[in-house]
Length: 565
Image: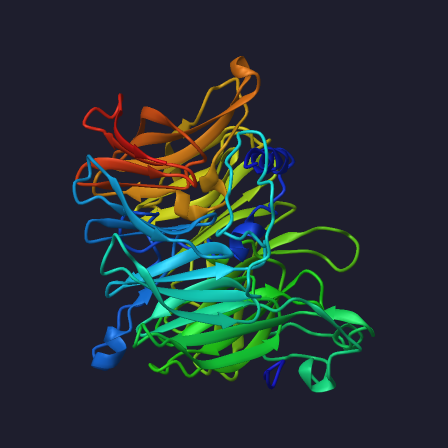
């Protein structure tokens, strides 16, 4: 049963310190709003991505060709780096000779560059006018000051800019496509770019009766909706989410193929197959509830259709808290009570999505009470959840029987993880070594026996007496686990009390062995390191200010080869 029928730099870092210190998770929200809540496939620019289900033998050739790609702020294609710089727009770096990177060219664009795709000598850059930074104006990078001028771009909402990059020295804009609302996440599936986002909230007298369910009780998902909760109060702000499909088969002439607008909040999306997009966000009619919308994207041309919507008790922090596998949707939430006693719970919910118009709940599995939920990662028939109070329980969940999920095992260690990367019988976690969120750490776990997970190794980052944080603790793309190279790249920053409370930004290299981690060298960087990877055995690092290439033949003593500001 459907619920709906139709449709300065450093100031920010100091704020991040404060949030981490008190254990607040709100840092995930701005990340989600700029579409950074996803891993990066290929190019060595992020951690391993969750792969879509393998197509069945009877899938058509057309379906097989609809590969799923996630956007990012950097793409490496045929020896060139393409950067979506939030201040200056598109920048292209010639890295065909990786030891001597050169700035090839770029295109300045208005608004805040969010992320990009690169395909067939065209860069597709998504930008937003939500922060009103206008890249055509001069931007200064003072160490202790924010940008002096804030200029409104010529457009409102969001923009997809298509740039012909065949001539790297002289890239040219060939098309611009504007649409209302602010994007929260994107995916490219074949010839179609799907953008999910939110419209600015508006005031309505009430939500129409048929938009909240006329019977006052949604029985299909097992979540009762009392009538008094379903009826909104007059004059309240109703969130509206959207999914728009942009056909890019002809890059010079992108066009809107379809759009769905529906009640809800587009906080995160999950795309596991070529057929479905799950859009999740808060539900205003019921506090501390997640509203999940099933959006059908099976049409190769980009026609989309809103199918069922269902409420899940509790809240999530990022897209890794939910997943679809073999037509089963799984989600782990932090569920809050509606009445005394105030005992909150971490709970797994499982749904059958075989019929997209009638999503039904299969199971509810309470995991633990009075613990906050910090990280979740699904891995086929298994899942991992990290909760936190004083110690960090790592739970291994057996999902092999969808309607009978089990807590297979549990491990308690100090601190907590904020992101997990499955590696078969091992698991890498990034988070904090202490309960105060002041010591970033990377951990390696043995999960070969789900009933008895073990911590094999842990590396703490930065100076032991200095307060530190890591971009990877709230943007998973900043972490790069290179399993084939036996290397983990993780950015970190810390306050250097010997330098008048100066900030040190750096990247830490960690050897990844089958049963241990080993701390190697780190290199300091100008600006917060947002991405890092390895090309031709050379390390590259990227901040909003600097691109650097280093020789890491000796991982204990990286040697700088070239830098571009």
